[in-house]
Image 1 (tube, rainbow, N blue to C red):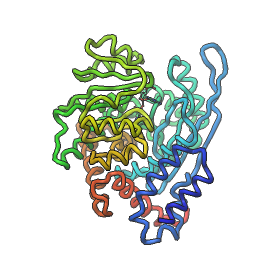
Image 2: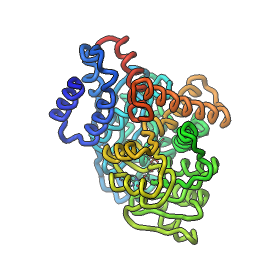
Image 3: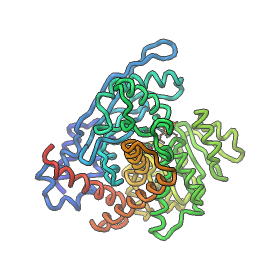
Image 4: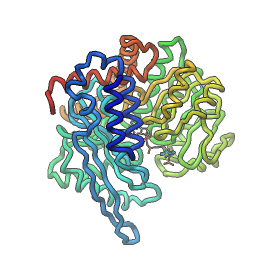
Amino acid sequence: MEYIRQVLRDLQIRHPEQREFLQAAKEVLESLTPVMASGKYENMGLLERLVTPERCVIFRVPWTDEAGQVRVNTGYRVQFNSALGPYKGGLRFHPTVNLSIIKFLGFEQIFKNALTGLPMGGGKGGADFDPKGKSDREIMAFCQSYMTELYRHIGPDTDVPAGDIGVGGREIGYLFGQYKRLRGAFEGGTLTGKGLAYGGSLLRKQATGYGLLYLTAEMLHHHGHALAGKTVAVSGAGNVALYAMEKAWQLGAKPITCSDSDGWIYDPDGIDIALLKKIKEEKRQRLTAYAAQRPGAQYHTGKGLWETPCEIALPCATQNEVNILDAEALVKNGCIAVAEGANMPLTWEATGYLQRKGVLFCPGKAANAGGVAVSGLEMSQNAQRLSWTEAEVDAKLREIMASIFRNVDAAAKQWGREGDYVAGANIAGFLKVAEAMEAQGIV
Ligand code: NDP
C-alpha cells in the first residue's frame, strides 16, 4: 500500500539514525494495510500525525556522586499521543537510552494503552543513567535532579509516568518526593507504581508479569492447550520476569530459566522464586549469587538461553533479545507459544519465522499491557481517594487481559488475518486511536 510505504520512507529520510523507532513504526504500519483501503486516513494525514510525537523534551540532569564529582546525564520525555487521555508510560534508566529507544517505546505505548480500554494516551521517558552499582544516595540525587526538570511537564491530567527498566519502587519514591516538594501539593495521580504507604495500588508491582501469564493462558486455552504442566523459558530477572515466573508456578507451569545482562540460569527443578526475590529485590545481587545458593542450577555466561528446550517462551528482558537463530532453536526444540513480556524483544525476522512455523505468538503491546492497566487502576483509586483490595485489582487485571486477547483475536479475524496477533493488536489499538483523532480534528 503506497500511503504506508510513503510515510515509512519519509520517516527513514528524516530520522535515519532512529533504528528502534523505525523498526517499531514499520511493524505497526505494515500491519495496518487492510484498514487503509478506504483512503480516508490518507486524506487527513493520520499516519503522518501518528508517527510524529506531540512533544519531545530533552534535558540536562546534573548530579553529584559519592566522591563529590559532578556527573551529567541526558533526560527524555516523549509525549507521543493524547487522543485517548493523558500521556501515560514508564521511565527507563539505562545507559543505552537515547531518543530512538524512547520514541519506539512511546509509539508502542499508544496502542498498548488503547488495548486496555482505559482512558490513557501514550508517552515514555527516561535517561542514559546507569543505576547499577550506585548507592541509594546517588540514586536519590539523580532522581531529584531528573524530576527538577520533569515536574514542569507532568500532572494527573497531562502526563503520568511510571517505572520501566531501572526504575522500580525505590526510584518512584524519590521521584514522587521531589515532585511533591516542587509542586507544593500531594498530587498522587501524577506517578504510578508508588509504594502502598502513599497511594500505590496493590498488585502494581506484580501486574505486568501476572498479566502476561493470564493472557498466555487465555491464548493457549483458545487453541486447545493448557498452561498447567508446561515448561516455560523466561529471560530477564527484573520486575516483569520475577512476577511472570511467580504466576507461572501458581498456574501449574514450571519456569526453568532466567537471565541478566551478564548470563543466564538453567534450573531443571524450576526457578526458586523466594531465593530469586531475595537476591534481586532485597540484596540487588547478580544471578551468579543464585547459582551459588541453589544446588542443581547451572549458570552460563553470555547468551544461549533460548537453546533450552521449553514449550512456552516468555522474553522479559529487553528489545531485540530474540533473533532468528534463537527462534529457530525454539521451534526445533518444540516450543508452541511465545508471548512478549518485554517491549519488542523479538526481531522482525524472528517474529515472522515463528508465525510461519505455526507457533502461537502474542506481541508485547497486548501481552505486557497488564502493568499499564493496573497503573490506570491506580490513577482511578487516587482520583477517588480509596484503595481496592488485592482480590478486586486481580479480578480487574484478569478481565482486562482476557478482554485484550478477545479483541486482538476478533480484530485479526475481522480483517482477514486469523491467528495473526501482531496484526490483530495493531489494528484493534489503531482503530480506537484513529477514531478519537478523527473526532478531535486536525490537532
Ligand atoms: P527491570 O529493570 O526490573 O529488569 C530488566 C531485566 O532485563 C534485568 O534482569 C536486566 O539485567 C535485563 N536487561 C536489561 N537490559 C538488558 C540488556 N541490554 N541485555 C540483557 N539483559 C538486559 O525492568 P522490567 O522488568 O521492568 O522491564 C523488562 C522489560 O519489560 C522491558 O522491555 C520493559 O520495557 C518491559 N515492560 C515493563 C513493564 C513494567 O511494568 N515494569 C510494563 C511493560 C513492559 P541487568 O540487571 O543485568 O541489567
